[in-house]
Image 1 (cartoon, helix red, strand yellow):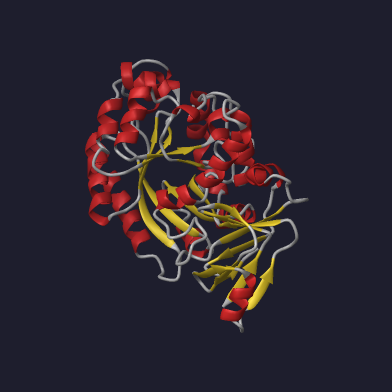
Image 2 (cartoon, rainbow, N blue to C red):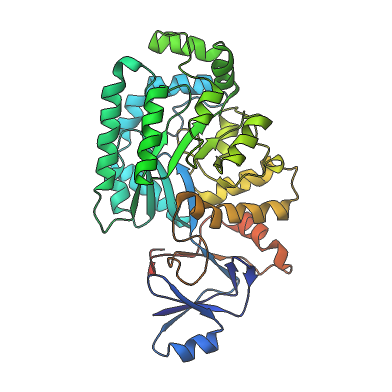
Length: 404
């Protein structure tokens, strides 16, 4: 048994002081240090550094590890030139992205306090890395393929990857899951089969949706830059689906939609009605010129996520949170900081269906300790100063074991 003590603890009831947390691999008790010491006389007592806050481990619900070798290769600034550059450089970037590169990025995420993440896996290349990392990984096996002629082959490969993730070593912390690439890249027949598979096995489900204005124009009108793209690479000029058809395919199963920057009021209302959630990636949206998700106007649970290094400069969750604070100037900054901290803890855990994300008895003992240069004078600003002053956390625990 261990007892950890910090100046503040971030709980479902907000920031509290004067308490400690007793834990093994799970949280066993929360009480004053005096009562915990009396109840567990042989426990190892861990005192965090002065000016520290004990948080549940942070959760990054949407990240791509497979393009982690990208630094300056891909074209940023606008979505379609970026997509062209992905096609042109895909083989070289994936060839350079070996296990050591992906493992290094998992470690970098952990240094920023990320103890759980949702990994989008297009080819299954990161499976071994995800098995070995100490973090909890929800492995979203991604389905892609809009050509009906190759549907059986593509779906067969997808099933093989899902099956491999289901057979992961019992000592790993992998949860198998399913991802749909996007409305423009997945044939409706394949989409329905994948949704049914997720329902059959109760697997978490995710899908990119309405990331760019070019995507919206293509799905609505069959025109624009995507028309040139599909003619160039796939010899077709007709979308395989439309927005309504795609969104309604998920009506019977809660889904984690990614981006939704170009979703309109009606579509967002439908997403809310069907109990879906959103992954909001501020830097990726800005770097690819996609626009801004008006989070102040939506009443949908959302997480802050980094996306991958194909459209970002780091997988550090605090870099992402600071970018979000700057992007959304419409919301009072301290209020926004509180929403963001909830989005990468309790909400993130709910989205990925993990037994963590809050400091409560029975939850996994996943912690991130943030040490500030000095303790803020106003408790209502703790989230804000946490975001502004943190690049790396002081300590990280996963399943009760210390890793940072």
